[in-house]
Amino acid sequence: MRYFLWFLVTLNLFAVDATLKIEKDVESRAKMAVVDGSSAAGSIGDKFFNTLISDLTISGHFLPDSTHHLGSTESGLIDPMLKSKEYVLKYTLSQANGLTATVKLYRGTDASLLATKEYNIATVEKYPFLAHKIVSELNDILKYPEVNWLNRYVIFSRYTTAKRSVIVVADYTMQYQKIVIQGGLNLFPKWADQQQNSFYYTSFNGAIPTLYRLNIYDGSRSAIVTSQGMLVCSDVSQDGSKLLLTMAPNAQPDVFEMSVSSKSPRQITTFTGIDVGGKYMGGDQSIVFVSNRMGYANIFKQSLFGNSVSQVVFHGRDNNAVDAHGNKVVYSSKESQSSFGSGNFNLYLTDSSGSDTRPLTTSGVNQFPRFSTNGNAILYTKLLGNKSSVGYINLESKQSLLFPLGGKVQSIDW
Amino acid sequence: MRNGLIVFSTIAVLLLSGCSQKKPNANVSNAGDVVSIDESSVNGAGGMSGGMNGSSDGMKSVFFDLGDYSISSGMQNVISFDADVLKGKLSGGKVKLEGNCDEFGTDEYNYALGLKRAKAVQDGLQAQGVNASQIVLVSFGESNPQCSEATDSCYAQNRRVDLHLMR
Image 1 (cartoon, each protein chain N blue to C red):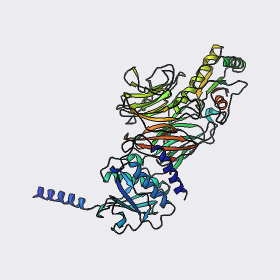
Image 2: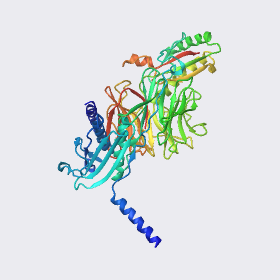
Image 3: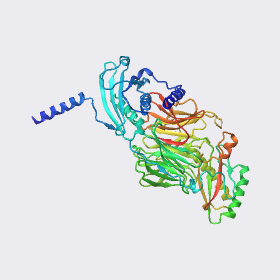
């Protein structure tokens, strides 16, 4: 019941961003029914089914029937009512050796078996990852563009009390969450490698901020660098060998690049105001970053091999968060001059030259935009009224989804 | 003959794999147990007790306007007061300036804003004769609010620099 309510909330919130200018061509998506053949899947049954539906929806390639169909997966027969579906996905869940799903994919019209596969995950509470894996491979089997970002961990820091925080890893729907670090003030988590085995974060528990790298599986941790004032790992190069840091060795926040092997930071920006949030762009040859060099927070770019700085965004008076992938740039912009709570922040997508700009959200406070590893989706946080959510926008299919998220997120990555 | 057998075998394998729709079992890649580290015993950020708000050791906090990191004329007297306190108490020790912000703005930018505020207070203290080598700066961004109500006066209390002697 609780999960059902959660899903309704999701649908309701989803309706908010369904008014985006990016409308989905529903006809281009494949209709699919999902048939659950599990006899005793326990409380996970409904959650697992709903996770499959969410995954199929946000993939942008399917128009899933949200009805929780029950039926045998042993028989190759397709219920006549489901013959109109392009695909029928049948599965059974069993709690043996963790959680196992046996999956069969049929063509709805002629009941031909297209694929069958068995998936297992040892830790039952990580069941969302089982569903994500099934749907991402389903995309691959049917030759749709990959949606492997479904499988990735989301990592975020959340304030608990003053000067206290937790760092949490989660699946993209936030159904699986585990606190990795609790107690103290540990902020700005950033994945250190493509495999998501380790992440960087800043500890404020010593005399000055210290950047650590922590392996989430074996707990090994090493101090990387320290800086007076502030220290943030803003981005990691594609091969993981270099970091973009915001540091202030002389009490002046600027963007630095540091080789992980040499641990010797090289200063990139030199403005006397605020330069923060460097993100690699264009094959790691240049960066975008946030600066107040025009008297307000805005987005700029600079080559890593030169000092020339160019303005990227030409609208808004408070654009204080940015991310980049290739030549795509997403940023958060304050919509009104209101100083306080009523001011909305919306996300905009543009390119490295600031052209072809379009809004991605239309209401609420939308912040922390982060591209997926393939650049086809964007993660962000949304505050609408007193409800906070984590949201996803599939740029290819124009789909978006929101999932409830409690507490005040400090920073997020995936 | 041998080459023909290899070709035949390859074609047979390809045909069989094409006919068989059964794929091997797959384990989910990020299925391992994730560690959990408890730092609750840590004595709060910056080595001070967690939740400490405002300045200590007889010093006063310096407050700022929205989005600003310049010292207002009204706050110059506060810096003079703090400089006098430090001249009496600092001796060979150090003072920590903690920059803070209201909740508006996002992650990194807010921390930079807090740092610029701390730097502005450092410059003010230096001008009053406090040795820069005895000053340590850190920004806590919006992580250390003194007030959590949604009012202008409350937000104003959070845009500040706190001063503490380091022990």
